[in-house]
Image 1 (tube, chains in turn blue, brown):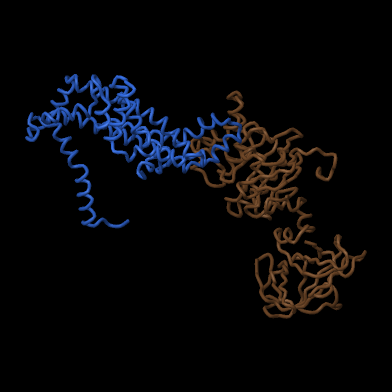
Image 2 (cartoon, each protein chain N blue to C red; image 1 turned 180 degrees about the vertical axis):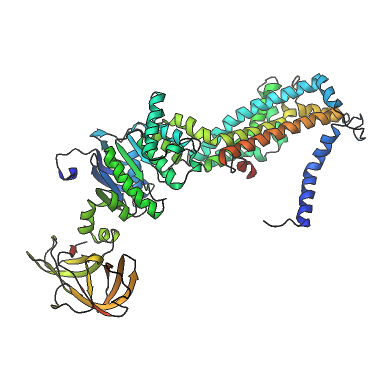
Length: 270
Length: 370
């Protein structure tokens, strides 16, 4: 191993600081006793305590979690099916168009996706709220699941499926007992990714929301416009903790299943 | 003597009837008709890309033939899906399930049959004992050596007691010593279980060692189907003779056909072969000689004449058990001869550039027409 030079250590520290310093400051200030956001008044957990009494904020958090759970699950099913179609069905008619359509949301500006969905929901005249956000998020994040699952399927050894069938296992059961357990880490990390994407989406959600369904990002954004309250820092810290736990467990899971090289490689390669 | 293929009344266990398989424009298997009998250890032998693995996969049902039929015990097998065929395949890559333990892998086939748990467990134990992996039941395949994985794959494909066990290059990933040990184990296993084995290999030595009969394939076609001895001693073409072992080929034309053999006039003089050949005077033929059947001497034989050529030693290869001499004949042809080193050679009696005489008996020479 090469010895780390001061230059390397310095650039590493700078890079990490650039990425994480704002978050660290936010986390520290969430434990600030002072009501003023910019003045340090000693350690305290009073904003966390006040958060428990903030019904509106908790309500929003609950809505967000439910939407994220629903849309991540739906996106995982749809994204996996799309990945299977792309990897397994060979060169079917319209394959290029299909893969283009799958990946378009990846690069589509969210404003456009949001606006288009809003127009659609208005046109077919459904009440905007919880369900419209869930549908919109599913549209937004399915492609991410497809990318992750597809990269796992591409390296999947199909002779394993042949071996299962050769031993008397019919195709559907082969998929359930051999293919699915082996690509499960990719499904889990795809789900985690989708979940976090839905959790922090502001743009699409604000286009497709309606009365009674205010997600956490929308509420935080609207409250910050009236001035940053220390409470917001506490909410954000909790969110960061949730996301960090999710990502860490997904990568640990992948590591556990594949001895180090796992589905997170699919994320890294994105 | 076990030779059901010689008995016209015997019913084959597996019959390929004019089977063809194309991938796009490439033909992998072309009009193959082949009978394999119950209890045989049968080898499909050929260079890579000759279609032998495709033939195996057709039998397993992993590929569908474009033409022809495959029968098992006289019943149509072509349309039966792979998971309903009483045929198991041991994959070249072993294809062990990485998410299951050794035990789980071996039990996989039985679990598809909804057998009682106790029976599955006892048969798995029995199988693991057979392949000497008793202590490894709870291990994952990633934590086994290559040889152990190979035995797990074997156990997994044997546990359902298939009518036919297919082995796709089963020993290719093992080192040489382990490979030759495993070859004999496979033979004992096949004999003691009384099963029908079909092995695919590109290694002619392996095919000769394990198989009772060999089908030599080239470019999707069967070139010769016979016992190892027959293929070695009576190849039907120059290609087979060259593919199976080493061969010297001398081109010439037939001058005499009679009771005392076939006489061929060639650049290396008059050659006589006793082996029967379907030729007439004037035909262009090749006289084929295995190197180990050619004698080499520093002195000319007492009677020079037929089956005797002179030349100069061009190269010597010392292999330990054998020495290979490459001799350049006076007419420029290179001939090889192999001499068993039965005594310890401290110094070689025959050296580079020595003038030598090569002789062989008329029984050793074969006449090939194509």
